[in-house]
Image 1 (cartoon, rainbow, N blue to C red):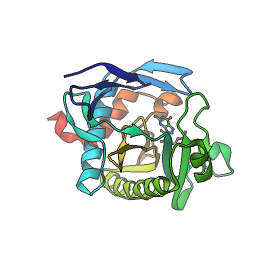
Image 2 (image 1 turned 45 degrees about the horizontal axis):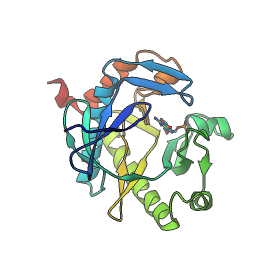
Image 3 (image 1 turned 30 degrees about the vertical axis):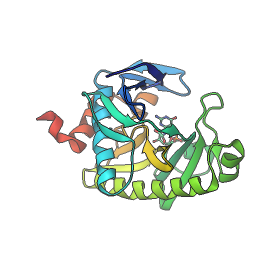
Length: 237
Ligand code: 5GP
C-alpha cells in the first residue's frame, strides 16, 4: 500500500498510496528544535503522537470540523487525505508562553481574556516569521477568504480542545495548526500532538510537551505517555 516517499519532515514522513487522493503520514521518533539546530530521538514518541493525533482528529470530526484524518493503518501510520498544504501556521494562544513572551513585554503564564491568534509563514528558509493577512496574500499563500475561514476553524478547534483537555487535567497554553485545501474545502491537516501543542499539567503546571526537549526539562517519553494515558487510555489496556 505504501508508495513513493513524497516528503520527509522533521518528525513525519509522507508517502503516496495507490489511491492518488490519499497519503500515508508516518510519525517518527526523531525530534528537532530551534530550526533543526537541536536534534534527538525518543523511543515511542512517534507512537504516542500518532495515537494522540488520531484521538484529537476524531474528536474534531465528531464536532463537525473537517480534518485530513481517514484512519490508522498501524500504530504510527495514519491514512490521510492528500491535501495541498497552505503555508501558514496558525497558533491560537490562551496563556502566554514561548515566543510571545520573548518578543513582547508579556509575562509567561498571563491568561489572555480572549485567544490571541498568531499566524506564521511556514518556511524553514526564513525561520517561520510572523505573518498578517496582507503579507500572506502578497506572498500568494492564501486568499483573504481562506484566511478568514482558517481563523474561524482555528478558534472553534481551540474551544473544543480547551474543554476536552481541561476535563483530563491538561491546560492548553497554545498550539499550532496547519491547514490544507481539498476539492475547494479547507481541512485541518498535519498533526495535533505533544510536538505541536503546549500541554501543562493543571495541578503542577509542568510541561507535558516538546518544551521538555527544547529546554531539557526531563523525561520526554514519560510525559508523552502521561498525555496519551489521559487522551487515549484504551491503548494501554
Ligand atoms: P512558539 O511561537 O511559542 O515557539 O510556539 C507556539 C506553539 O506553536 C507551541 O505550542 C509550539 O509547539 C507550536 N509551534 C509553532 N511553530 C512550530 C513548528 O514549526 N513546529 C512545531 N512542532 N510546533 C510549532
